[in-house]
Length: 251
DNA sequence: AATCCCAGCAACCGCCATCTG
DNA sequence: ACAGATGGCGGTTGCTGGGAT
Image 1 (tube, rainbow, N blue to C red):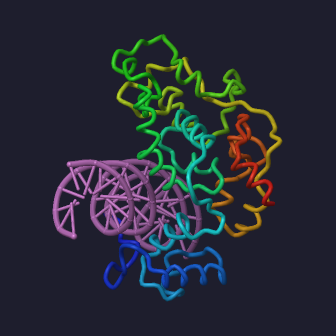
Image 2 (spheres, rainbow, N blue to C red):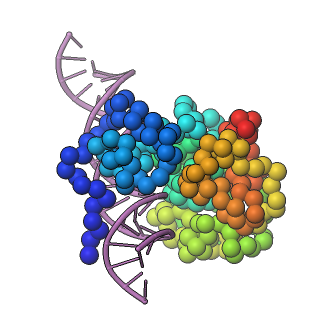
Image 3 (cartoon, chains in turn cyan, brown, purple):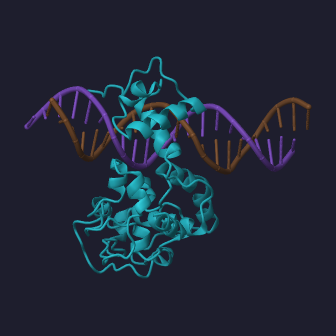
């Protein structure tokens, strides 16, 4: 049985949002907070699908969004996180304050992919392109080694940790969905992270601005990394970058 | 000046996960 | 336990603006 559409398609606006629609959405969320996206359009006087409203808010209108170019630090962090999580854009976005999954996904597809390819690195496997075609079973990837932080401790195992862990385990501890079998990397790169307490905390600004936001709670959820403190991974692995610092200072 | 091409990005679509009655 | 409703995610599409010809 197919799913019913999330809204009546008829009489719904599609395509680019107008300033008026943006304002209606902002005003409504300011007054009522993020709530039931399905009923929001009607309540806010918008002729939009609830999903469309959510997307517009999450990707464009949220006040805590950081617009503008990605920094080199963010570039590096995205590459590192992608090597760990694969195309789990929401997980990656959760570690980059002020950035959205859509934004990162677009940035990856338009900039980073090309950058890696120009360096001869397969953006999916993070291995040299020649190596991905003639793959050795036992040779660890120097690229991965270089990309991953030395602070990471791969020896410990915490089976209740990372949200993506089932994926990691499923794919032989290697998440990229490249052309080569991920299973072949089994035992080469144990990404089951075991990390200690952090000195970096969820930004207060994030807490304050999104008190009602399930999204925020999800992204900074206690226990996400196996501890009681919600933590930005980039901080935990020792790459606290400019964006993290900015977010912290804004508190 | 007109046209073409392409990169960048916002938005859509369909599927999956989770929640709720 | 189950089915339907809803939220969320990732892949893809298509519009737009800028540069090249």
